[in-house]
Image (tube, rainbow, N blue to C red; front, side, top):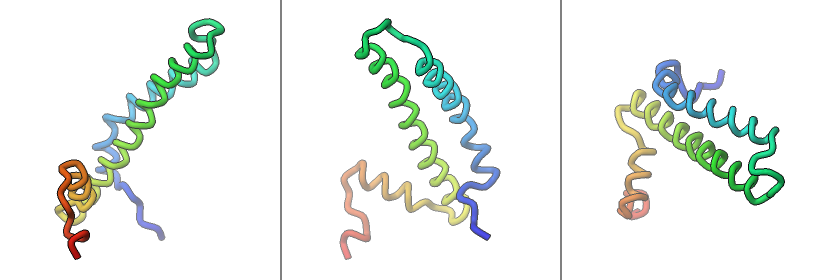
Length: 98
């Protein structure tokens, strides 16, 4: 049987992001079905982009955060968090030196 990526406790930790994701998804679908800004296609594109971009970013951040939480609960540390920190600070990781 395949191991689940996120256990019940990790999903509980991530529920704070599910409500904003649901709200963004609701407005994406609402504005996709209605005419926003009249017939101007640029206004429609901008209004959708202002919803879709944060939605995609929040999905990515939620997944990465869940992965870090799950790794930390299993092993006591997170390789994902270490790799992100090295990327942000510009430090070379141990893997790059060898």
